[in-house]
Amino acid sequence: MDLKSNVVNMNLIDIYRKTKRIKKENILGLFKLEEHGTDVKTEVMAGFTTFLTMMYIVPVNAIIMSKTGMPMEALITATALITIFSTVLNGLWANTPIAMSVGMGLNAYFTFGLVLGMKIPWQTALGIVFISGLLFLVLSFTKFRVWVMQSVPGDLRRAISAGIGAFIAFIGLKGMGMVVANPAVFVGLGNFKDPDVLLGVVGLLLVFAFYAWRIKGAFILAVLTTSIIAWVSGIAPYPTEFFSLPASISPIMMKLDVMSALKLSLLPVIITFLITDMFDSLGTLAGVGYRAGLFKDDGKDLQKTLEVDAAATVGGSLLGLSTTTSFIESAAGVEEGGRTGLTAVSAGLFFVLTLFMMPLFKAIPENAIYPVLVMVGVLMFSELAQINFKDIAVSVSTFLIVIMMPLTFSITNGLAFGFLAYLIVKVLKKEFDDINIGVVSLGIIGLLVFVVQ
Image 1 (spheres, one colour):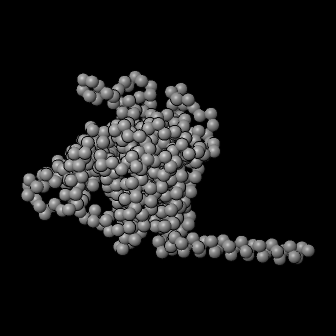
Image 2 (cartoon, helix red, strand yellow):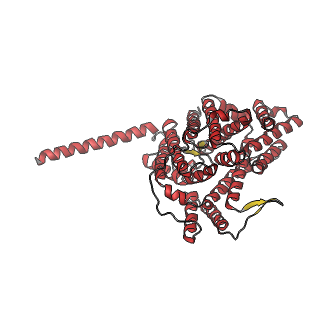
Image 3 (cartoon, rainbow, N blue to C red):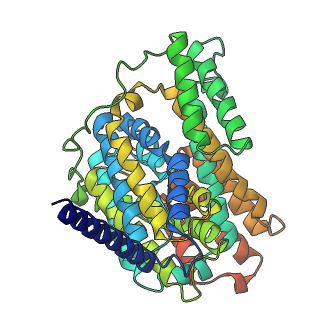
């Protein structure tokens, strides 16, 4: 009997070893790890690093979008779900280490620009996101992205990033109470004797420090540290529990109103979401991917990642979320050695943890969140360093894009001023070689913004 037991045990061990070897070979083959000079352990650790650096998006996006009247609980679950879905899908479909989630900037524009600013119902705003995502999805299967990259001046694309950075930084400062409305001078300093304002200042200093020290997960660490300070000092109530089952997304899922979004007056807004998402994605993929030699010369991996990006925006709008895009935080995973889609799949699966962290996220005070917006704005604003200000057309258009986005509280208005200015100055200087159909099209779209208001 003992002999039979030993034989059975040996057979089980052999089966286990063979199964493990087959699984490993399948993973190596699916993600082409050997071809990329990496291994499973490195990819999983890189995915965990990416997860830490962008985990902040779940509570941050939920707090921002909840200002529209959408329930925060549903937003937390939906944000986690779209992050898991899009990031894992990208890893499997495109085999690139790019993580995706709800984009910073456009979620602020969705909330403060469209819903609170233009008084558009959030259901209609979701319809706008859906349409822009659908257009992006269709165009991602064509050579349109190549045409865009060749037609639209790189300086204008960088100016858009810087302008959005100024826009969301302003929202962050306003949310913190560091700047307030002042009838005499429009905007003034807030009350720095207010404990909430001081909490925001502490949070801002922490996020600056952690990022400067290159600490992994600097954003989420700053949020948690600031929250602990708020809980201990009594500025905000501390959580009585930290984990729970995910909340239902039924209050926001499939609530989009596409028909209300199909208005001529909203066409510039739809185009704004489209081109901003496209430029954001292309810029992120160029910065993260090409630097690490991730994308091949034929561009197939890039093409597939853009397809997932667009599909995720469509899917996100159905879940009740603003535009989904590729995250620059993916660079953290790449720096840790991530080279394939296994990094993205790992990062996406780690986000499953956030589905059960509802009580903790709800207990985070807003002034622990707003400093992150300011820091993200700073990083986006740094794109100005790459712009050629010796070209007067670029200087004027960049200035108008950057200044008008926060002043008018509208990304669309900033783009309109900038695109029109670039075209007009180029015509005045008779620099017709710099004018192509892309520049003319953007100028017409800019003009349309003012005509259809």
